[in-house]
Image (cartoon, rainbow, N blue to C red; front, side, top):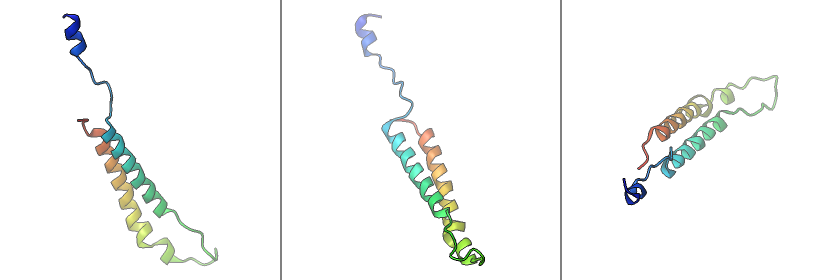
Length: 83
């Protein structure tokens, strides 16, 4: 091989592209939102059990769905081939 041919060969050693990192950032945001929604607040009276707060739609349904979606987005971001 001549010097000119060696210069034309470019090996892309980057593992992820900018698009992959954007997907990863989006997945982290969705994960953080899911964990934030699952966090419980303290009760006004610790002697009284308020099942409406503990078993709300947000904590029992929405937050776990967001967490699973965040992990799926992370998997897609890792597996996606850079363009």
